Length: 445
Image (cartoon, rainbow, N blue to C red):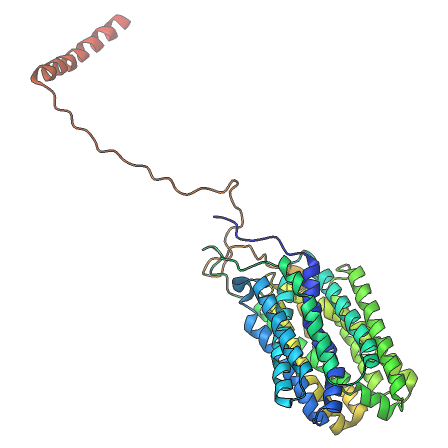
């Protein structure tokens, strides 16, 4: 049987694709704010447009989770980047509201496609945590630079969309290093069942709620700083810029530590620390408390996210759980602003912080359990042949590989007909054999 597996792709094309796919959610606050300020949309309607973007991204991940190996990383990555460039470019080039919304949805589907391909490729890396950390570092740096640059370039809703479309176009050359479609052999054709189904489902469900809490706080952070902490817009901008810088430092530290601490400690302790940061930020009534909560939160959040991505990748090296977990995260992110606004209106900012912090503490336990039980068992090799019954076949392959079976052609038997003289001669020889044997036996005694 021939080996249909290929070597994992280089890390930098995946990092570029990860950056292009994740940039839109990172820039969501400025996207929604500019839609509200420069188009005939209310804050709630602008938030719904942002939710449509994230739902399009999540839909792409759910649709492509099991199809990436069959269609290939390179074609799907190029499709995603093309949709992102066209969709966001259309939204930037027009002020017609239906075209803007359609462009946002198409661009969101393209972003989700690029993110799904990147997650699938990261899962096949020898060190998925390091690659995911590099991806988070790249997208954080890109988003931070845009947050500092876009206000200097003027107003209008077009600039954030044009920036996302430009990054998608710049990532196009990296797709040349990705693999094409594969045709699995008969031994691996039936390997469609997801490994570790319970652990993966628990992780995806917890990540949905985990992302919901992050985006719920992020969606009302500006209101908390302005209304409750009494900070002017310029001070808020400085706080957010420093918070993004702290996120870069956190991702750098996570990349340096790697897997030395395992996955359970960073995920469990990090989620508990985020819960404290959420409560601190939501209850802040001045600059010190608000800045401390935002900076610490943004420093810890990408660290935990990088370990969660690595855990999802370890559950299946074909990347299916990484894609499904990322899609669940996108769903939670899409619902986060609405949840944050409803909680803030119903319980106030402090009550919202307590509810979100308690939710994070509740889901920290199952996420840590998955990291302890499933994360320590190691990934399921993508090239391991699996029988149709689900049990893995023997992984020992003869070396060299056996060739095709050789057919042996059987010749028909020949029947010889003896002449009468030859038949009498043969019968006479057979009659003399016992006498010769008896004589030799007598002489031997």
